[in-house]
Amino acid sequence: MITAKTDSPTRAQISSPEDALLKRARAIHERVITLDTHIDFAPANLVGEQNYTQRLDTQFNLPNMIDGGLDGLFFVVYVGQTRETQSPEALKAPGFERAYKLALEKFDAVHRFTREIAPDKIELALDAADVRRINAQGKKIALIGVENGYPLGEEIAYVKEFYDRGARYLSLTHNGHNQLADSHTGERDGWKWNGVSPLGKQTITEMNRLGIMVDVSHASKDSMMQTAALSKAPIIASHSGVRARCDVSRNMDDEQLLALKQTGGVFQAVAYGGFVKTTKPDSPERSAARAAARREFDLPDPKSPGQHARFQAALNQLSDDQRAEYRRKRVEIDKQYPGDPPATVKDFVDHIDYAVKLIDIDHVGISSDFDGGGGVIGWNDASETFNVTLELVRRGYIEAQIEKLWGGNLLRVMEEVQRIAGDLQK
Ligand SMILES: [Zn+2]
Image 1 (cartoon, protein in one colour):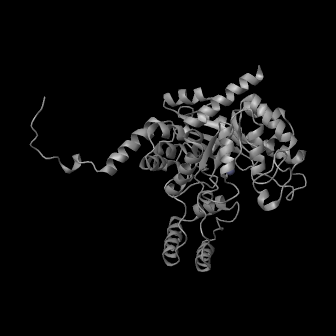
Image 2: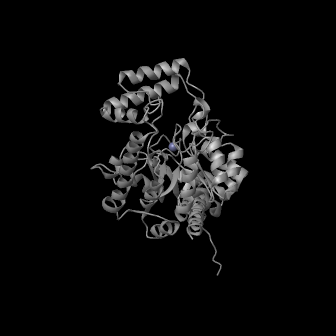
Image 3: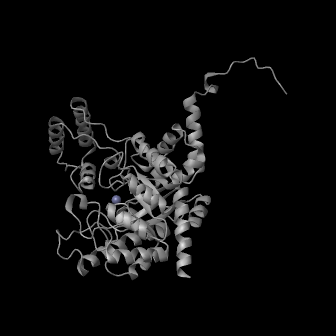
């Protein structure tokens, strides 16, 4: 039935193209499963009195996750690499033992968090079917990845132990070579194995047999290429950038991306500012002004290695007035001595675009590295997760593609890795 409309629409009824785009992006973000494959944590933030059920001063926590419409994450059991130059026992029993204990503490924290502290809000998933079931139940999804094979020591049996504790991916290395493989840091420091060690090769075989995804983030190019050739199952890069867009050793060049694709795997682009965009160094005037402001408030330099967390903690120790005063000074410095702007969501999505063009939509995914140094302007904590989807929609990605990027591809790889493990165990 046609009715004559005499009223002209009110302002609210006219939606601008931008409103329509926002609405479409929100609906897509709501419908697809959004998985972030790399989030770091301190065990205390999972099992302490102050924990992730509250809005802590961390990039990731459950309230931020809910606000940002992030459905699932890999909690990363990360153990830093003690180098042989730091301790002669780094790659001997005492070093391995120490690392192993740290890893167990992190596994235990994830289990306690999901089983005892927030079982009504989040649940541990062990396979892709779990991910879909937990999501359908309206709960958040926790998975476990291991960053650095160092804590495995020389005990191949620990690979199974980590699998039994829930690990579904494991990277051979972190920063610095270990008993399994060379790290990307060899570009600066030189090589130990020229790729994967004999023990590392056995470890890959064992991961294939059990159904743990082999993660090549942090590995050297030789380690990565050898892993791609050796692995009987698809491999992943849980959090890496595109080297053609930002030339740092942590990122992957085109040859590596194509080799990863060959395995059927997935490259999870990382929103880590320093791997997204190479920023020009600060001018001497800007550096001096910033250092003076920090000195005034007794703050360490967040850009020195390993100091980011200490800087955050020291900032939190200040009174509200002091913190406001420090921030006011920072704004003033930015005005007087502008720095090269840091990486944004747009810069980050440029990496996704590049990878999609090179290795196809089926082999690319998304990761933040929150609370491990990750974050870009616009996606600087889990509450801003929607901005990534919005930027993808803005660039013309359709829902089926966004679904793949946000976890569909990763789940496909997880299923494939588990299927191959089943075959290998027969
Ligand atoms: Zn990392």
